Image (tube, rainbow, N blue to C red):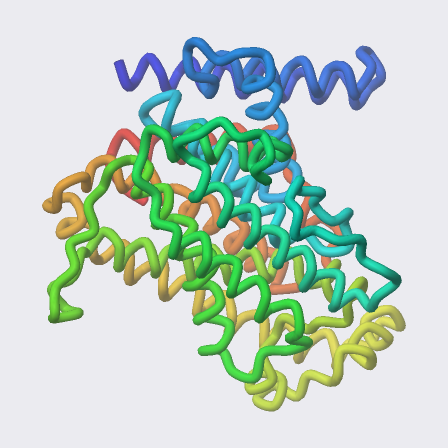
Length: 383
């Protein structure tokens, strides 16, 4: 059954990629093809039976959000075991993506507390975005058992999906709040001081994201007084979350630097390798400063090593993870770590050059190869 499902997914993925090639060459209108092909995949393997039109539209919006802004996490979500778990994965991921989007319109949740935002600085606008999401999550947990359309969740597709999940699953509010707190702290940071600061952010953001997916799957979190005997599953989730967070930071580093002036390389690595200030660095890279580019590559190399080290720590826990209740389900929730590794490998092949024009270009062959790698890992219960 698993092999049949895997072959079916890969076939659908290849069909979707063929649609993309046809649109690229003008054979089919791009927007219509993109929407219809993606919706077909969603209906085939994500949407729970009995979803109405509004719920299907919300689901399509969530999947499209993840596929556009968090592409490394899109394919792993399709390998979760049930339609409900795949739906939940994309709903939670959509929440995570939207709370981290910079310079996009503020969410318009329907609550009495919301007021118009006057002309403000980008930082104030981003803080307001997080505040609104906090209100949305608060009303989501308050209104999970009633149908009052005055609640914030009633006006937002992602929150409507999360409400559907909360009616059927026990999800911890503290994980949502921790993600939002991490987002809020990140808004005002132009550069993290230490690598540990960046690691802590990855744990709070991506680590708690994976923990929510584990809760969705009903994986118990065994908490004891001794940290060494705590749930190996949730410890591995934190480590994979850190690797995933560092990878995402590297992937978005140059766009973030150019739009916000935020340098993802922590200050301690800049001092260690001689990386200049963000403003100078952009100018140096634009002017072809070979020395400036070389020192940046050295600092990026260090960050890649940190990401790989946390992924390896999580992998060393595999036997203990599988021995715990829910371990076989948990390993599929860890597949985003394997997908992140493909970007780290690509970055290493590009000599750790974040400015390489082909770094973020993924061809059809690589898409299929990655899907096959994820499928094999899911069958072998690896990550």
